[in-house]
Amino acid sequence: MKQLLKQLTETFGPSGYEENVRKLVRAEVKPYADEIKVDALGSLIVRKKPIRQTKDTKKIMIAAHMDEIGLIVSHVDGNGFVRFSPIGAVIRSYVLGGRVRFLNGTQGVIGFDRLDDLNELPTLDKVYVDVGATSKKDCPVKIGDVAAFDRPFAEFGNRLVAKSMDDRAGVLVAIETLRALKSTPHDVYFVFTTQEEVGVRGATTSAYGVDPDLGIAIDVTPTGDTPGSLKMEMDLGKGPCVKIKDVGSISDPRIVKWMIRTAEKIKVPYQREVLLVGGTDARAIQLSRAGVPVGSLSIPVRYVHSPSEMVDYSDLQNSVKLLTALLRTPIDLG
Ligand code: CO
Ligand code: ZN
Image (cartoon, rainbow, N blue to C red; front, side, top):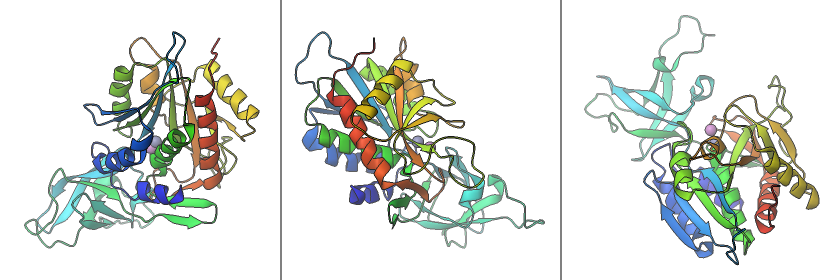
């Protein structure tokens, strides 16, 4: 599982450019899928059919997004310095001093315009990428080229660190659940979505296409366990979080109950999540067509949207256990 997570997180895939991630996921899920499709926005839709189709069979959409934050070239000056526009919520304090890698393999160092006050934090329009060029002509990237943050996967004991744990950790949980599931009474659609970081766009079209009876998003969630963090319950290493509310959606209380009941039954630790910032694909699923009941299973992560997002290995294992148990048993939302 760690090896696959390393591969997933080290793969290039900013929003709109998820192709390499999709290839990797497709190869992993192929032996376990009954049907594989790619929709017009690039989401990979992997179906696991029920043992027996009856009138009570529920169509469940599991969503995990393949894309990551990044940047897109907006200007190259005469000396070959590259200005960019962020893809998704790029956090200023995390990018300075870092490196990026473009789809064509070009690497760059992130620098910023000289500041009068060294304690000041430059705004992104004062930040640039130095790809080693000396002029616009010899610059190996052009306007519209896309880059992702560059940082290798690392293992600190039980803590795993990489860029794009958001949401490759979720992608991993979905893949491993499909592998572990073997059979299900439900009609399950594992959807590896695109363009979440720019406004849950891939989940919007794929939820419309799948037309599920209920949905669960698998995504990371920021923790409340670091110095000066927001006052929230979620801790690293204390189990998957059952989302009750975030900024984008309020989980269906029946789904929250079902998730908690299942976690308690199989004795997997879980945490109750009220997230004060951000949202997930659950929002797009919930607001699709005439509305869909949703929940989210979240993996606690520290330093979200930095090139060193940290998760705890046990949270990944317990997330797989919980999601597998949820999909193995009949659901009574009544
Ligand atoms: Co994110
Ligand atoms: Zn995410």
